[in-house]
Amino acid sequence: MNSAIKLTHISKEYILHHEKPTLVEKFVSGKEEKFVALSHINLTIFKGQRVGIVGANGSGKTTLLKIITGITRPSSGVRKAYGRLISLIDLDAGFQEDLTGEQNIYLNGMLLGMKKQEINRHIESIIAYADIKQFIDAPLYTYSQGMKLRLGVSIAINTDPDILIFDEGLGVGDKQFNKRLRHTLKTSFRDKTIIIATHDLELIKYQCNRILIMEHGKILHDGGPRTLKLYAA
Amino acid sequence: MNTDVQQYLDLLWGMTEKELRVRYKYTFFGFLWIVVNPLLQMFLIGFLLSLFIKQSSEQYYFHLYTSLLVWNFFSLSLVKATPSIVAERFLIKKSMFPRSVIPLSIVLSNVIHLLLGMGLFGIVMMILKMMPGGSLLYILFGLCLLIIFTCGFCLLTSALNVRFRDIKFIIEALLVLWFYATPVIYTFSLIPQKYIWIWRLNPMTSIMQLFQYGFINAPPPGPAMLSINLIIIVIVAFAGIRVFRSESSNFDDWV
Image (cartoon, rainbow over all chains, first blue to last red; front, top):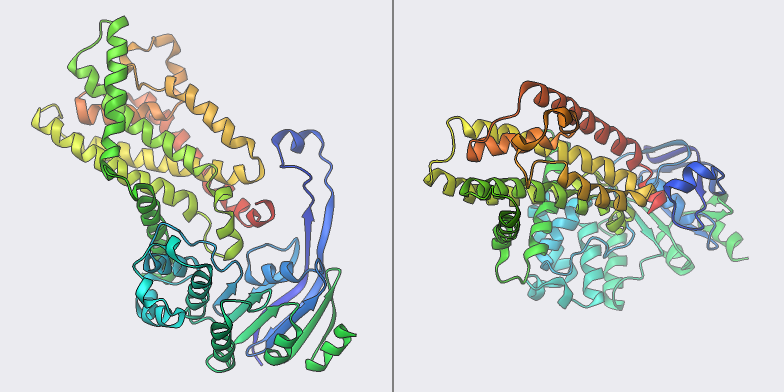
């Protein structure tokens, strides 16, 4: 099988800030407190796998996702990702309230790594999937929170991603939209790699075929759907 | 074209459009504000100085307008770009796009302002037949240096400001001093010879002089001034790119 993500010996330490860093602090004190968020993670995720990551708050789930997406650089170790990777973290970040829905689609799409031409090709399906056709020329501040999130999801899944990453589950939009999203993941994204970090065990049971249980910055268990029992217990 | 380059340019232009759209949304005068601002400053400074110094002539007002247009571009770009990475922290945490589009789109949106402001002014100057022969070349050369210097400096300060938030305040204070260290409200000919080395260390001197020659036929920068200024511009630009590159992968840890 081809790998989609390959992490070798990844560690991530954060320097603890008690206050905002200043120039003086840097040169005078020189003493830094460190917090280890991930330690020596080795992980290969293969193409088409659907990985659910569970673990208590602070166990390193989000940091692991950030390393996988490349948003954060590891303190040590090597990260390799193959194919276009889209994260559905902070869906409405990057939206501009004063711009119209359509202008926001272009801006957000480009921030997610699409070219303008690609967006031209996909814009119809983005609007249709988000179900906001009649509001597309209205400025975003007239949108409800649900509409913005729907638009965010719709842009992300229409970018032709090879790897999709969700933080804190799929709790997006109303029941109907959520159902549509779950359905899409099961059908159109059947062959794609999906990584979900969540506390929602039902969702993982339904979507995932590989489970990672994290604790204190380490992967404690790694296995098939049955592994979930070890976490629930 | 290479797809990475195409994608970078698309994104840079998209962010620039956003800058411009958001700035002038719901304003009545819109882009007219580009011209109104330096005009107001020009009349105010010109009038005030005419009370003290018998220098006031048409030529001086034109000198002021040219210089203020260039200076406002530089100072506005720096003031807005320096804290820009921190201001766009939500974007940084959202996806892995090339971070440099954040400060560079701010500079680029100001470049568009500058070009519009200069275009209008250029038309007036051409009608008045003030512009010397070959002036377009000087203006273009000045524009290149100005853009390279501003981009380099903004990359440097925006990257450093992520870790050291004092940079923003240092820049604001520095710009006040820098304004007086650049021939904006005075002409280059007023600088005493024995202090000229101070202006040689300030790349904005040559840049100002190139524009002042191009628009109002003031003396162009001399070879010593231009070459020292050029070296500094190149150093700043390279330092900006290097520092931004090495810092940008750590931005997420600090915002």
